[in-house]
Image (cartoon, rainbow, N blue to C red):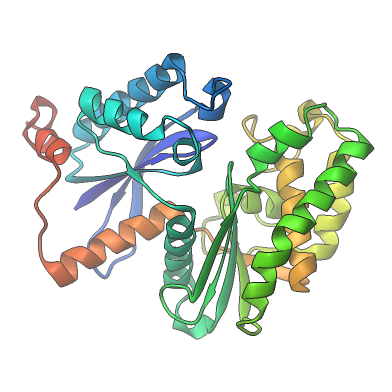
Length: 329
């Protein structure tokens, strides 16, 4: 069956379509995405303004039509920190459902961390043993560890690359003073969650998911995405420390010339590198493996598991509309 997963993130809004069935590897079919930073539309009270809501609704309608055109049978739609932390997030979700019929599920930070871990576990398998996974998003940073399919511990802290860039590195390139202050902030924020995670014992492997980790690995010499997901990719703390220094001296325009760095992430890749470096240092980890699967894949795999163990589910209203729409005939 063809499944769609609609991801309303902090940096982008992204619809991914995959061909999947229970017990099989989900195969990407098509995607539709747009760079949309909802935090740029926050007013002084922390509300997403009408312009931001309009941009979001416009994209969701585009995604709905895209999924219908490509005969998607089910659609998972979720949002993370951008809406979760806005003052009027609940009202925005209600308006989205009213104007598009799509119901966005708001994931908590811990749910986001756990579902990402679930995807990483499925990718690496039981032979990986205990996994410690780190994931850098636009608004938050997730830490999870466990020996089973779901983690024994899942943390989410406000150390997303986009958030830190806006709040701490507003100059381009940033000043040495702002970088020093941000490093201190990262260390202090991570101290408690990392201490709790380390109390679980040492993991067998450490993994990193998300585009930020993939970009950092590519900058430091990992294989390009064109070589496929099965190539082993690693990120080493020694390389990360070196490149954090180099990135701090570069403008965002200069970073665009680096491998794996897109225009949407050129400004915030430094903050991502600083979070990654700070976490690896506090965990006393010298290298990590890069996982190609993350949150979207976790939600898809969880949905397939529901079909296996619970039987076919009645589709939400918007899925029923998709199945009956003219585009599917």
